[in-house]
Length: 141
Length: 376
Image (cartoon, rainbow over all chains, first blue to last red; front, side, top):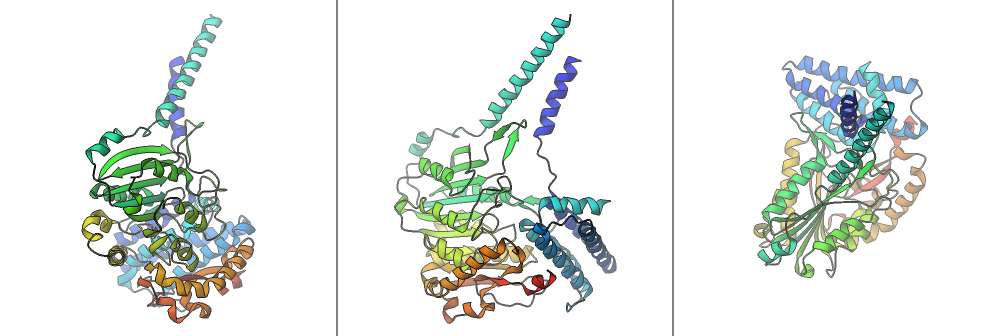
């Protein structure tokens, strides 16, 4: 019993010491990176397009849910709108809407890399981690 | 029987506490000892260094990025590896490396040091210590203390290079730059104030390399230009893979023969080639020959200062109605002398609204974003 308590205590110490990786920014980055990996893994352009489109739509729905649930504070409103606007631009460019030329099939892999890199730059300076975690949770439900 | 049980529990408790204290001492003392006997190593390498490199790598925020094959990388750790290679390759340089890390606790309760320091001289590691960073205002005082402890005596004779890696350094405000210390402030002015003390008897740093987003603004170049002869910076967003440091590995071959400007061009061209090969977002690297840019900076200083003053007031309530853009897009900044002293390497983003923008002036300014304003 005493040995168990002692071992348990030691294990707990090291569990607590392990840095928590509940970082919303990192997880959203992973979301886009996984999408890009899937795009690059398939040869079929229509499938690539569908993967990208689905990824944007899922995130867009998650953003709407967060907004409808009243989770966006006035403090976060501007960066939230910017993020949403950025996502809409990507969707428009993929489909060739709103003044954009449709992304050619041959450029879909590069476009998926562009999305990862652009979002990494946007996330590094904008949305607060808590908001991103909420979005991610909704995405996963 | 009960007494014996209590006694045993007490012993386990004491043992656990003892173990925690031992571990905390063990871990907090890691990397605090100089690697070698400092004076002995210096005797063995008596030739004085001719280059002095000071490198600050900020790592206390989100510095995760993915390469094109999908590998997750940490920008600060990748940079530390690169700069250590630079330090090892240069037999005539002293290199100070400061890695500013996130705050962390050992065993929940024991704060560990949040900075790592490396000092290389003539290619050899002389010291490797952990240190405490500034907790509130940051003007690099702990870094300066370490610099003064180890720097060579012939400071004024050496060619000096300063490198900074991190996110965009704010032009005002500066709260939240560190994830671990949200109330700690760090601004361009703080960096400039801190750097003055690194100069010693020298009038100026020969070259400052600012590996951050939006480093090429009139305010930043004006502030740091007071301390540097040449500045290399990115006027727009800079991908977290940063500037490639390979040209710094052979300073004797590249810097001694050529002049500073030709070396800066070689450095920028190499960094540009590497970035454009791997990055789909825009790539912009500018070289500022500071003396030659003074006329333009003098002309626009008042206008830019007024914009910053207005932004300070508005940012508290409407942070995103302002955006950064090429100064050439704003009539009041589009002056004939704007290109004087600036060499720009630019490639637009391969996608997005600005993919057909062919040129960049090398200067980044602030503007109101009508689109965002309409959303509101």
